[in-house]
Length: 227
Ligand code: DX5
Ligand code: ZN
Image (cartoon, rainbow, N blue to C red; front, top):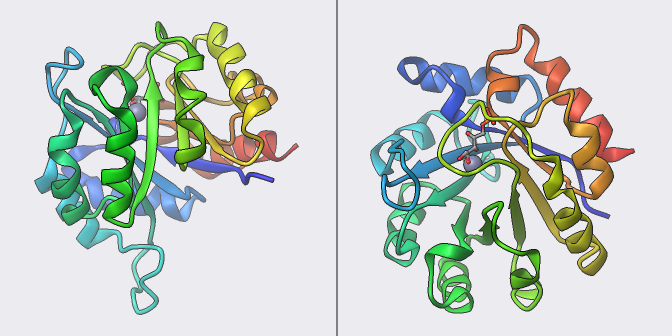
């Protein structure tokens, strides 16, 4: 059985108060922090890079840091970049716990999975809305997680694409124990579709960071996945 995981996307946070905003959502029940790295080439937007991730790592220790007293979280780095191979070592160094590359951005996905795992972090592969799910069938057994994009990557605050749900269903049928992530437009209104299709790792930017009560949104989403 896979477990429900909610990963707020820091893209929707207040970057001037990033550490505090992250502590707030972790204290509200978030398991992971979803870190959207965009290079202005793979997607038409630029977001953040290593210095911010390294600073955030100081404010948010690793989950296995038993001595740490600050709120801890798993760093889920969603790399919307060309040539993702180039950035694995850097992101491991600045604190990534998982490196998610885009299938569309690399020539040799299996070699990249092996490279990521050689650094002792988790490896995940994402597909854009236009990419068929069967490209992940061979790679699946090597992955810690698959990400089915539910918006066109590049921006937060877009509308959830319900038509991506058959991809999630197909992956869940093939890989009953794999973490399957959905990303884009997830909130209280759309989570029932994603949960029913079989997604268990829920990225939510706008719906969590702008909520009056983030704990309520996070627990609602976890509850839907667990059902
Ligand atoms: C889009 C990013 C998403 C985005 C999610 O390219 O990968 O993670 O920030 O934001 P919301 O939840 O606001 O759609
Ligand atoms: Zn993302």
